[in-house]
Each structure stands twice: as structure tokens, then as C-alpha cells.
Length: 292
Image (cartoon, rainbow, N blue to C red; front, top):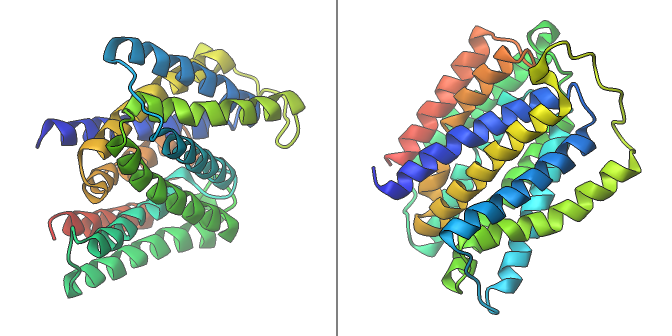
């Protein structure tokens, strides 16, 4: 494994931990206030990292930096809304289909060639998603959240937006933008939006649930997620700049297991044999594609 793929592995771990902790946090605190504060923390985190690694950009890269920020923000908004309608592990599993989309795009670009083996793996993956979804939908006692089709639709939107953003990263980097610039571009778009929603106090306004333990505190959770998100974005953007999107996407998919077990630990989802089987089948399909 190269150093670049090593960063993709680390990015996956921090991303999964961040998403699972966020899923836990928004069941106890106002979602908009939580997201605004963690976004603010992550923004300053990027600037701090940039003081050590440097920040590079060119005039030609700026339009792509801005477009990347808008795409990531739109995808994150869809992701946050999806959390209300589906378990985090199911969202992660559906998002894993991004790998198949990048494989098709890389095929068009001439990086990969598709085969019957590819479509067999795609069929297995679709079956795995259906198995997880049906188990969550059919047996209400196996899921904490009420699973709705809109949650899947929002997750698909998230996935598509993130796939497009991955290729915009390549273009921006070719014009001279580094990972810190790309990430700061996202936060420049996200902070005003989430700040407006936090001040407006509309949608999902709720009083904080009683939190007898210090680790349930609003500020504690926001700082934890903000730090995890800072590290994740730096590592992931660096990986996309230095490796092909399909390879990075493939490595990211191991995060579905991390998210599932953390969500069970945080009691935002329930364990079943069918869900575990679905994750294993989905993972087999992804690993098969990786070595295809």
C-alpha cells in the first residue's frame, strides 16, 4: 500500500467515526446549532493545518474550488436530511454505490475497462442494499429510526454530488489548488448557510435531551466531531488529488462496518444477522471490484 492509499484508509476511519458521532449527537441536540458549531471548529482546524502544510491556489483554480465547495455542501445537506429517515449504516451502504459510478466514469475516461464480472458484482451489491433496507423496513423492532424511501433518495443525491466533487478535485488540483484550499472553499460556502439556519432556529428545533454524562454535552460532541471532520477532509482530499477516484472510493467502503458497529454502540441502530450479512455481501462486491 502506498502512502497515498494509507491516507485514504485513515480518512475512512475518521469519516466513519465522524458520521456515527454526528448521528448520535443530533438525536440529543438541535441539528442546525450542532452542525454550525462543528463546521466552525473544522474551518479553523483547516486553517491551523494549513499554517503547517502551506496553502496553495491559483486564479484558474478558484472557479473549481468554489464549485467543489457548493457540491460538497449540497451533498452534506442531503446527508443530514437522510439521517432523519434511515439508519447511518444503511446510508453508508447506499453511498458505497459511488464506487460503481466512479468505475463507469473511469471507464469512459479510459482508466478502467468494464466486464461481465463488474456487472455481477454490481448485482450482488444491489442485493445487499435491498437486504439491509428490507430488514430495516419490515421489522420495525430492528431499527431505532423509521425507515422511509425518501432517506434512500436523499442518500443517492449525496452520493452523486460527492462523485462529481471527486473529479472537480482533480481538475482544481491540476490548476494549482491544494487540499487545504479546497476544504476552506467548502467551509466558506457552508458556514453562512449553517449559521443562518442556527440563528433562524427553524426545522428540528428541540430542547436538549437530559445528558447526565459529560460526553453527551453539546460543546463536547461538537468539538469531537469538528476535530474528526478536520482530519478526515484533509486526508480524503489529499487522497483524491494523488490517486484515482475509484481506488479512493474502494478504500472508503470499509467504513460501512465502522459506522454500523458504532451506531449499534451509540444505540442509534440495532444489530441483526440480516444487516450484518448485507454489509458482508456489499463489502465482498466492493472488494471484488477493487481487485477487478
